[in-house]
Amino acid sequence: MITIKNLNKSFDQQHVLHDINCQFLPGQNNLIIGLSGSGKTVLLKCLIGLLQPDSGEILYEDRNILQYSARKMKLVRREIGVLFQGSALFDSMNVADNVAYPLRMFGRMSRSEIEDRVLFCLNRVGLKDALSKMPSELSGGMQKRVAIARAIALNPKYLFCDEPNSGLDPQTSIRIDQLIDDITKEYNITTIVNTHDMNSVLGIGDHITYLYQGRIGWTGNKDNILQTDCQPLHDFLFSSPIIRGLIQKK
Amino acid sequence: MIIASAIETLGRYILLMRRVLSKPDNWSMFGRQFLTESQKLVIDSIGIVCLISVFIGAVCVLQIVLNMGDAILPRYIIGFTTREIMMLEFSSAIMSLILAGKVGSNIASEIGTMRITEQIDAMEVMGVNSANYIILPKIAALVIFMPILVILSISTGLVGACAVTWITGDPAPDAFIDGLQTFFDPYHIYYSIEKGWCFAFLIASIASYCGYTVHGGAIDVGRAATRAVVTSSVLILLCDIILTQLLL
Image 1 (cartoon, each protein chain N blue to C red):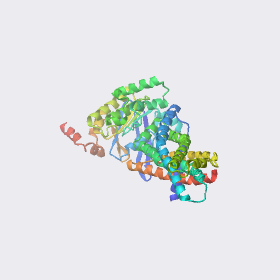
Image 2: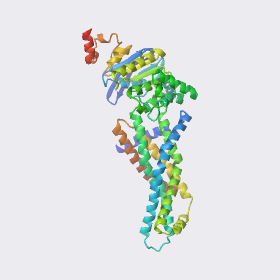
Image 3: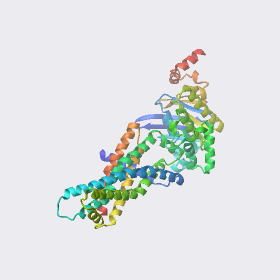
Image 4: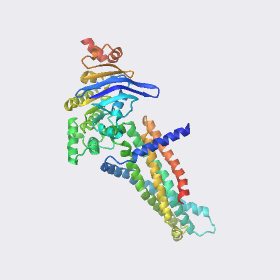
């Protein structure tokens, strides 16, 4: 479980996050949605420790990571898996080495155990035949799946996904969403997904937080989001002709 | 304003180096990276170093012969002068300038691309000291193997010079080889190697700093590569003056 209390972040004069308070539970997909520039990525970067907030608390269970020293934070980071928007695979390594990287770096595993774990993770994302391929030889969807395999290699407690569907076709998008959903429920991970993909919102949105101009505008889930009375969220949702058509049909 | 910015950059460079020069998270991964970087930065540079050194050695002889003209000086002086040029300046300072172009731009663009494609962020999120993992093997490889490049450059430069004397016959090869052995001071080799170590550290660390601090896109990576080459070249020249004054 991750809890955020009174989180604020600004860059120079620009206040990006205003007094954010929310909670993300394990075993469900926690989606953060919002317009571009609403502060989703900044919030995610604060949560994974890539940005230092100006004030507030970020609690991983009951551990306030903002008060942690660099050494203590290193240990917390080993419980975190991140899927970056552009996959962020190491382009000098093949698929197997990419997935094995965190295991070799921190795991106390023998070579054969690492090989087994790599195979398991790649099998889990349906890519066990791509072991020796370089990232440049893979499609966007395959790169995302390898990145997911790398993210789950160390059995993380927390999984963060930044726009996992960006640049993917709708079918592959749904497959990636399904994979994230399966992994979250199977391993009871606290998963936080940044997205503005409507398929994800309505498909895997167990808990949805809508960010509007750096503030939480609405919280709910996929079942009640279409009945929202929050006007900015309403405008955000119904800007999609597909959603408009869906509602008209209903 | 410019001074404040320079001090800020120096501060950031020192902070980065503090992270770089710490104990690796995993020694076997460091060893792997070290071997890869040695191949990429040193072994792959041997060809260009030898080629340029051979030609510079040859041109040195031709220039000295031309400028000495018929002066009443012993011809072995040509060999002596060529050796001193190669040992004292070319094989450390000028070769380092060439390496700053080849290796420096390579390092800056590689690390810059890793930065903009979030590969460095991915390492940081995993809890890896990315500066140490990426930069330390590069610095270590270049600094450790620089003496080999320096000695190789001196040797091939002198071979090039000898080849010219054999082809042109002026000066006679025997006189030239006599000159190469005249007033030989082994300290000059140590001096050249010491300068090489210093320049190797400058090239690898400055290029890494430029790449590591990139923000933006492809244009910024290009700018970082240019900045790496220009900054390290200027600092090599500046250090060359200081080291020459201190060591000779």
